[in-house]
Image: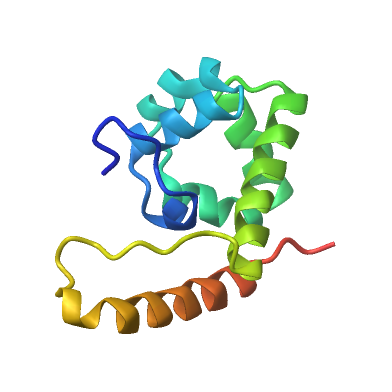
Length: 125
């Protein structure tokens, strides 16, 4: 998806394992890039992390050989992306397959859909 450039934070739900690796480098957790790739950790998996039980989280941490502090950093960075989506701070770009005459409609609908999706997946206190 990224083609060598950093992935769009707003599109984290559709990140592939390479996009996740680029993002891990950006947030200072690049040491986990290979193990995440080997375990198939993509954006959808990261998105679902907020719904994991304690047992599933511990299994994830063990499987990825993560330090507890690094897991907290990962969760905070995911939360930052979701909050930015809710606030509308992330730019929505028109994909190549959307005709230019529908650009404004696509961006408006896409932004609304993504904000709705993120709002439904907030971390529980």
